Image (cartoon, rainbow, N blue to C red; front, side, top):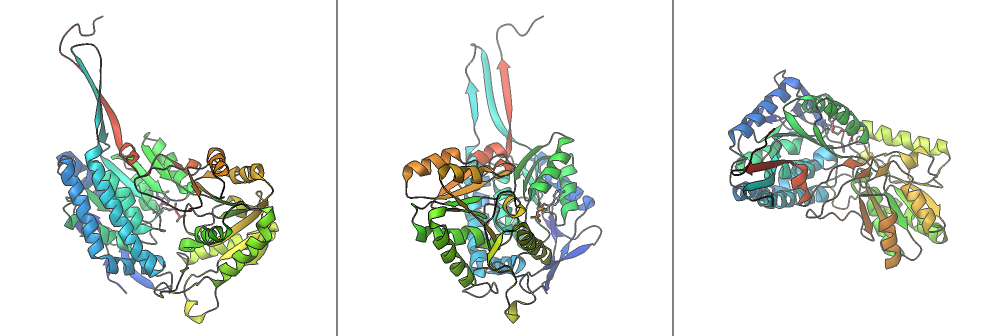
Length: 487
Ligand code: ADP
């Protein structure tokens, strides 16, 4: 068992004031990996005080922007230097295949570098007006940003949330999900090593109540949250009390639409990827497969064959494609949805249970599962499951594909498989989603912004647009001549 994962407050590793801890569990074995400091409102209070103090002192936000950028770039270098160790830690804490976890260290590093470049791009505008007056507007950091993250991509999300917020001069208090706190503690240490001053980045570990304390703290001016839509709603309700600015990246039930004119081999590969990558624990996962009727039987048969050949296994094995889901609780949730799909009358055509290999017995593994004959009134077609469960529905023509795809409370992403450019362009116009991928599911470039539509989010992420997300506007009117306002 690893030692102890602490909070990181005011530049130091700290236990909870209450001394309370919780266990972080390896989802592949069910064993405890580490004890973790369990923060409550007193620890949140300390972290926010440190963040506020650093913001007011200006030791971070008043550094020349290129210097802030350089230090964020230095975090990227340190992440890369420790990539093997961090990959292993992340893999054991999340259960994801070691190869993927290690690749995510590189993604986190690239995010830090990208955000480092943003530091120099915070600009203002001069607004021409009458002679003798000078009007300008500029973007300013909010002050203390509270960042709350889920467990599916811990290190990537730690960087994703904190890097742009820090780049533009805010101080941050980060609360990672209770299931996956370990890489975040190392991340905070590396940020300190890279010269991010004490108090600029703080980490408090804990559960939903810890997150709620962060949202409720009146000194936290901005909340950035990634997670479930229900928790997003709870955060909005709390933030409404103080009209606090909130940025949300929430759930999805993204359609993956395969037209008969598509390159079906590529579509097959991409469908397996979008449905089952990270064991289906991905907000943009293509969990609703819409198949044009003329190719549906053959496509589905090939899909089931390929899904059954996917390697569900221990994360350390090089050939593993699906690790466990994050927790026993999450596996039970997935199993409840599978039972529900059967009750609702969908046809289970692949998977549906746990793997039988003895070495996987103690972990939270699930087989990739496919339901056919799914209709949009079924809960397995409407609700986010967050596990390796794919719901398949047929359509007759483009209009029906659009109607089915848009019949959702969510609007995060959609994938279209087609060889026809006119159709691809029409689908981009007609689909209600923040991202539309044509023949390339899950492409995300850090320089490209996006936002969820409908109940999938609020506010823009990534790109230079992230500057807008982590700053607010100030306008200044100056006049040295002429008549001031008179009654
Ligand atoms: P999931 O259902 O995927 O576990 P959640 O949306 O509940 O996702 O959790 C994502 C993050 O939000 C976690 O860090 C969790 O501790 C935190 N969280 C849960 N409930 C609340 C809340 N009421 N206020 C703030 N944060 C919360």
